[in-house]
Image (cartoon, rainbow, N blue to C red; front, side, top):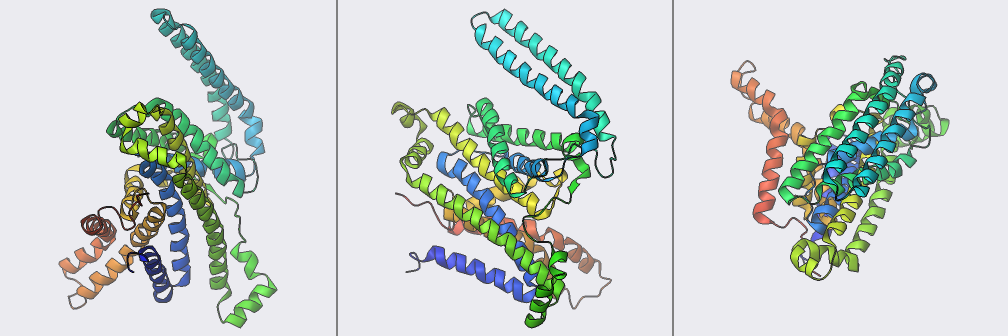
Amino acid sequence: MLGAHKTKLLFLAMAVMLAFIGFIQSWNVSLAILNLCLISAIMTLGVNIQWGYAGIVNFGMMGFAALGGVAAVLVAMPPVTAGWEAGGLGIMGGLLAAAITIILGLQAWKRLAGQSRRRYWITALIVVAGYTVSRLLIDPAVSAIESIESAKAGYLGGLGLPILMSWVVGGLLAAAAAYVIGKISLGLRSDYLAIATLGISEILIYIMKNEDWLTRGVKNVNGIPRPVPYEIDLQESMWFVQLAGDLGIATDELSSIVVKLCYAGLFIIVLAGLFWLSETALRSPWGRMMRAIRDNETAARAMGKDVTSRHLQVFVIGSAVIGIAGAMLTTLDGQFTPASYQPLRFTFLIWIMVIVGGSGNNMGSVLGGFIIWFFWIESEPLGLWLISTITATMDDASPLKIHLLESAAHMRLMTMGIVMLLVLRFAPQGLIPEQKR
């Protein structure tokens, strides 16, 4: 019976832990963790599509998540009129020149096949000339844009459209980037592919940190519009004040809970839709083909399957899901902060979610996203409570007690290691292993 209801029991245990945090700390904290768990679950779904379905090692998910954040800025923020007047045409002209350069370079490379020396020289000449023209157009425009009220603006802004549209655009941006990256790197062996995707992710984030005209760089973009009500608007509504009085809850606390519940509702709808699509794809002939390619590429090639093309396909789909999660995260935060995307830190965390939950099983990936993010957030306060309890009888001036209390912040890293070791020891295929069909 335990095996048949294992999934339900695990999710029930997760719900109990969230409820426990609600009673012990506050429901605001519990709902904040829930929302981040939902976004983490969507991100792990994207990674599971790549690794669990096709065996593709992608260490560049932070770059795709950052592209989703860029989409939130470009779609939802209002345009900066002064910025467009100062250098908008220059930016558009430079980007157009870069696009023409790419097209001409590809055409020259194809048409001069068989003429190796001319092929390299002419392609290189096109690239150098196009790069020079694009920089001549872009550089003055960038300087003009970034000089306009750099403390508040200094960039072009966005389109002023509803923020929910950015979730779709974030997926499309990540998919487009994944297509280009995949065409270049998917021919590499798995370990080289992991290094290449990690390096490309660092490059993407580096560009976002330094191109102020696009997203203000490390100055951050604040005040991104919400798809849910603002707390202050709720607190000024008479019906809401009356509701808070009837429930016996302070209006500021209730407004924060309502806003988080609205976010949770939106995130659950997206997660449910993506989960249904992922499961449908996994159970289809396409899913069986992808698992066959994952298990034995040589046999799949012998059966006439285009392995490289299928790898590119699943790489793009998984990256699009990660891009959607990135746009949702920026929407929840209400700001875009490129410095917060740390590939060497959060890439490891997301992979732990997939491994702990169960690679190749979508339900397991969702569970892993919930469990790991819960412990990532709560291990620090729980660790501080544990160390405070252990050292309660020690003198406050004791160097050992001071050192232990200062080290409580590192409990989350130790907790992640312990969780991963326990799962690998007692459930090496994850808490919810892949189902053999």
